[in-house]
Image 1 (cartoon, rainbow, N blue to C red):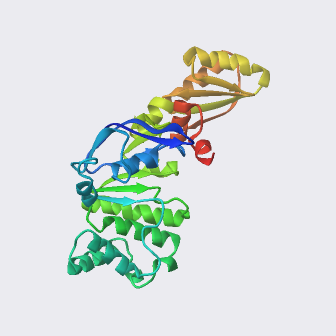
Image 2 (cartoon, one colour; image 1 turned 90 degrees about the vertical axis):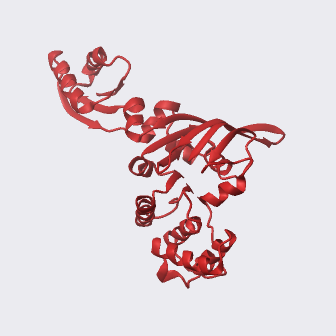
Image 3 (cartoon, rainbow, N blue to C red; image 1 turned 45 degrees about the horizontal axis):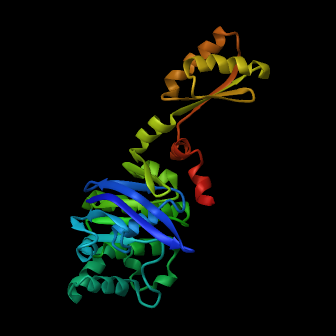
Length: 318
């Protein structure tokens, strides 16, 4: 559905070139649900704007939904949906009229545009709001309308740029309920960006991490967490002055993944549930008493920290 090779985009900022995207290679198969993660300024939105033909690449090639983004942008746009960060519908016309106008823009007859408007209203549970103006809707309702606008042309591929940013947890869950139902019923291919790492972790079957305009990781959330972050073990010893000896005992098994934090020894391992008894046994044999032990599964933020040395959340906030 997406086949991109060497996509780059350079901007001139105060007469100096800035590379927003540096050689993006990306393949997305039909029906996949892919999360596209990275801090602000990493190149996520610029990449999406190139793939949706809104921004020409400086160099590189890409075929989206079977058509070249440079030579056949109209064919690409006819086959994709794009939900940007800002609202798609205007404020002066009714919800149903906005959807009809969108269908007419895709070349539908008035009859077909009306029928399709009613279909997407039903799909996104917006039928009771059809006669309302968009500026009277709640944030979650308006975001569902944005998605409806992106679905009018029955796209095989839907781009969602931060679809749930700024929504309360209930509205976020509601948005994802509709998105997942859409995928289950229509096998729509979905590529989305998000600031909420729990969404990428639980929703996406594949995660692509981009930083400084380059892809730095690509795989399932479980693969990335296991390979790049690992589980965490935190063991607290009874006597703080015994902590260095405990650290030395832990390093015998994990020489590169042990840190000392006061009376606590922190270890990164592939499987914490099977490794913890071994560390406790090693401490006991060394005459070191442990008074607390806990394990934790890694997060995608841990993956980003392992890859770049900084937290994705901190990078987003800055």
